[in-house]
Image 1 (cartoon, rainbow, N blue to C red):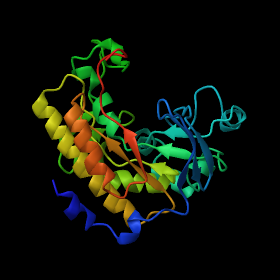
Image 2 (image 1 turned 120 degrees about the vertical axis):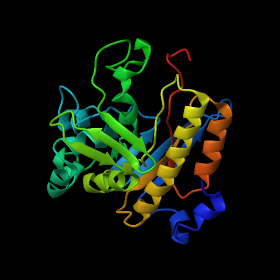
Image 3 (image 1 turned 60 degrees about the horizontal axis):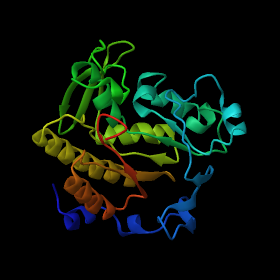
Image 4 (image 1 turned 180 degrees about the horizontal axis):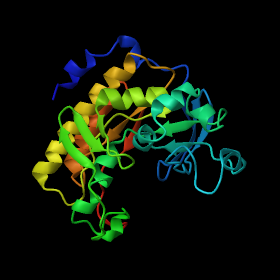
Length: 268
């Protein structure tokens, strides 16, 4: 992996400047715990933090529509890029004017993920995972593994809808999120299970940071008034988590998300 100095040379100097379309403001910080109350400003509205962010997997919440979500003061909603790539397709959403119009949520912010979580969740049925992790294929439940292969270039999936092959790379992941047009987007990352070996964890760590840097470079080619968060990895290894934070905080991401597995149960 490139050094931080080498990685910086890939990005224009303006990439490190404050963005006019995205800003975080601290309203109050606790002197006792350093916990903060703040606001994130986007082109589609303000996100009060901390905030509960519901997941609308296929661009909708179960049992309620966007107008009802607005009545519940849902500041930010989360949508899954991988599932939207399969159905209805990100190109369809783009032609409809992007996710905000597609969902009738034009005055509220949206965030989309990279599809990296599906590298993990779609293999859950073939892993020896505890049912406590809350995945459909965990705990011995039968579920087909739709991940066909993972290489340095990306991940090949088999569509659970029609069986066609779908390739997710840093570039295709970012382009899909450009089509969707969410306010906050996520670079492609690799999420390992909690029970991987140290060798497997190190390889996953390497892939995640390689893909995240490549995703950021592609994002910078057409920012489109979208903020990109990095994703901290390292599993349950404290030193790797620290190293991840140090590497990613030097790059011109707009925020930092906590990713990866932190154990098989809430207690862990």
